[in-house]
Length: 120
Image (cartoon, rainbow, N blue to C red; front, side, top):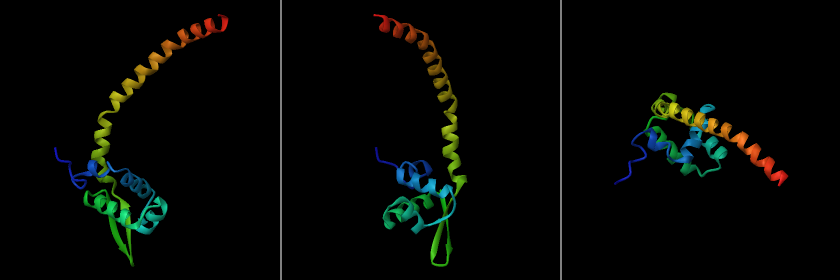
């Protein structure tokens, strides 16, 4: 089975950890490429490559400011990812609650077993 192109959709684009780092930085506000290079300690061509992918799927917008290109996060394009993850929130909560209940049930037994070890 052929892999989907990273520019196919936002899900494929954010599968790359460096792109998620770039989005994290841009969540704090608009940045020039050089700022991203410095903050992420990456080579400029690599940052530009990731920004190009993020632009192609609509996760970032760019505008010209003099000789600089300023990038900013496009939050609307993250909504499909948010909606997909949100769909599973109920399942995660149910599993965490079941785990909490199981751990609470083990506490008295653990105290009993611990007390025997100290005595024996």
